[in-house]
Every structure is written in structure tokens, then in C-alpha cells.
Length: 390
Image (cartoon, rainbow, N blue to C red):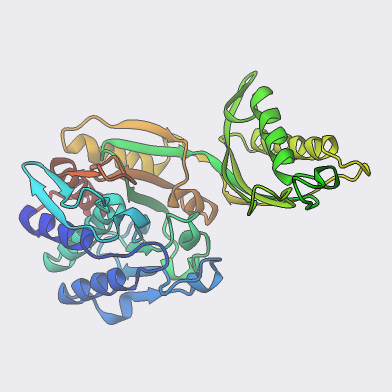
């Protein structure tokens, strides 16, 4: 595939709508292009991860396996197919060395259609040019943007036991992400007592008052936002508050969604515990004239666990070498967000993440740097073949 063809491919992919749970059209295009390149039907496999996801959806993960022509450990290449809602309706246009969304009210969708294109171009080139290669697995995941649901519920057996993983997602292709934070999400339900706010406010127990005291407690004591306690650090955020229907009613129910993150699992657990305690303390402080208090119901789950690879890990060493062979300077990095690599690590596949030139992701000013995208494509081909690109 020429550079021009690769650019046309990524623009086509970005123009197809496919937010989380609606990835079927993009997966069908991937399969069609691979069949055109000569991929045998026996190489394709999908799973039913969408049935296990809380968001359901129309499509599972797609895995495509190639037997090796040289005896080496199997290598996995991954990218996620879904985009965030702001990218629905994207119409990519090229201006010089960047690609933008033509409509200023939409995102571009380079996150992660650029990664999808890198994998598709790599697989196509290996097939069309009959390039020598180790055993390869290409994995296109779904529902990454809603808590890594696709890779979390992945049917690992369809991958063929890869030993090295390379995840192509956002950022620069020279930025090699070898670790990422762990994330815990919470839903906090506050139950109070309703009453008429004008005639009998003393009868009510305000769920909103409880929520406000708890959040104030977290901020005052350094458990909201960026958190640093001694040598430990992390973050927390109250991101969603829902409750109330009228100003003349003491609100009896509020639902809050919050999160806690840290590279240290034990410190993340402490952040969660401090959030729990703040809401329980607040519930003790708000009472009606009968001394009745509200109730706190806490629900939470681990979205993804933190990880960190050694710089000597084979996948990291291979990625560093591929970047250097391109005449570029590799940079090892740690992410403060979750990646498909978090769950690939849990599944037993050491995985380094590389960018594809995406800039300002999840915004209407998103762009794709063409030079970096093409560099990512060349790096991926090197990792898949260990020979010069043709």
C-alpha cells in the first residue's frame, strides 16, 4: 500500500460513524479490505464481548491470525474501532500535512481510526507482498471508549497465544507507553426524605445537602482532584450529579458518579475508602427535626488495573528498535488514563502502546498529523516483519 493509499484509507475510516456499541460498519469494512488483500476466511474470528458489556452493542471484537513464515513468538497488533460521540458525522478534509474535520462542530475520529488504518495497512502489505513474518494476530477491539469493555470481555483464546503486544492508539508514534494507571468507578446513591420546601422544610432530609457536604469534605481534605499524600499520588473526580425535580421540594434522592485513579493499587483503594467515608460522615450531619438521617448506598467496580513494563521487556525493546530504525528518537512514557493494553496485560500479553499522530483527541479541534501517521505505519510494518518496508 502506497502512502497515498494509506492516507485515503484512514480518511475513509474516519468518515464512517461508529461510536461505542455501533462498530459493525467499520468491522465489516476491515473484513472486506482484508479479503480483497487475500486473507483466507479461516483467519477471521469474532467474539461475543458485546453481550457481556453493560452497554450491549452490535459487534464483538475482531481477531485475524496469520501463521508465521519464520519461527518466532507470535506478535499481537491491536487498535480500537469505536470513536467518542462527538465524532459522529465526521467529514475528514486534508490541509497540507494535517487532516481535520470539515464541520467545526464535530471531532475527527482519528482516535482511533488511525490505529485501525495502521493495522489494516500492515496486514494488507504482509499479504500482498508475501513478506516474511512471525506468527501475527491483528485485533480490532470494540467499546474502548466506555471503560475498555471490548478488551475486558475479550475471548482470549482466539488470539493464538501472542507473546508480544503492540497497541496503536493516540499520540506520537515515538511515544512508547509502557505503563498506565488503574481506574475505579463508583456510583453513590444518596437517599433522603422529601418534604415541601416552603411549608415543612424541617420534615425533609436533603440528599443534595448531603452530597454538597461530602464533596466539600473531599476537597478540603485533599481527596478530590490531584491527590498527593506523602510519597503516594493519584486522582479522584466527582463527574456526574443527578437529582431533584423542583425548587419547592426537599430532594430525597441524588445519584453521583465518581472515579479514583492511581498507579499504586493500594493507594487507589485508600482514595476509594476516603470517598466512602466522606459521604457516610455527611449523612450523619444532615437530619430533620425528628433526628432522621439519610442513607448512602455505594456501588463500585475496577475499570482497569495499573501496570508498568520493564524497558527490557521484549515488546518494549522491539518497539524501541523499530522507532530507532526509522531515524526517530523513542520516548518511554507512563499514561494517567486507561488503554486496551491495561486489560491485555491482565490477559497475559505484555503490550506497549504507540501513537499514530492523533492530536487534540475527543475535541472538535482534533487533527491527524500525516507525517506521524505514516511513520506509525512504517514502524508497525517493521514490527510485523523485521525487514525493510517495500
